Length: 138
Image 1 (cartoon, rainbow, N blue to C red):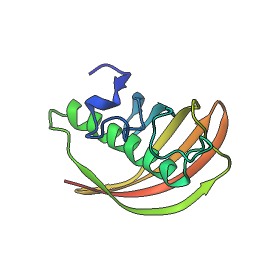
Image 2: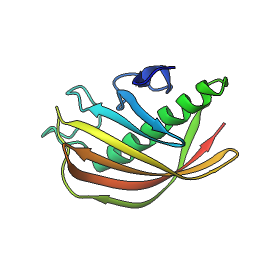
Image 3: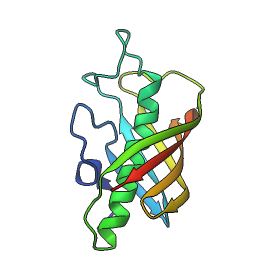
């Protein structure tokens, strides 16, 4: 499978709830995904600002795309994952409709059906949010 890969090929989410657009790079168990915040996103407030909870979901979906890619390359089916925990969430700015984002992912732990990943969300070169997510993978 050649990168970049459309996220819709790697995650079960569909528009408008699919926030991540593509998986751009993979190095081992780490990677980079991209997203553009669309006006039809249901997680925008009335002023077009993305809710903070959506930043966490964006990292979780990006990590799902990364795991889906790794599974596919290993000849496995893409597995379903469930967000089970959030730690150290910090938002440094507001994300709005039309913003193009880069999500950098680092796998901290990967133990059988359980994974922990750190995600950083950038708009241009500016860090917008960071969070650690815990995921159960079927």
